[in-house]
Amino acid sequence: MLQVDIIRDSHGRLIACSAEGHARFARRGSDIVCAAVTSAIRTVQSLLVEDLCVTIETNCPDRGVLAFRIKTYEETESCFLEHLGVFLIRSIQLIEQEYPENVKLRVLTES
Image (cartoon, rainbow, N blue to C red; front, side):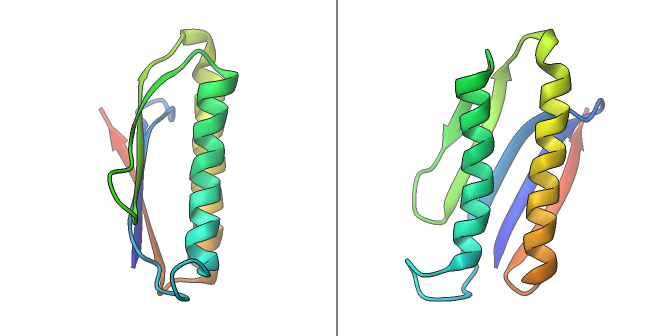
């Protein structure tokens, strides 16, 4: 099972995301479920780093682990962080709906 945790603050701004485990839909290198989740997370990471003045900390120590946490951002980017959070949640929800035995999403609020 691939466990995805998305953390937002009390205003709905994206704070962090982690994906851990294996979807086990297909053999390694051919797993479309893992590829879909990875693509959604990496797209958001790319937008954060390349399009915003956001500092993130990434953690990808081994295969089967992908995580990031936003360390700093400008207040003017709050709205964009909210929308990125909505995008990421919706993306993973759609994958989870189609592959419920392979992906589990938790959306958490950090105070």
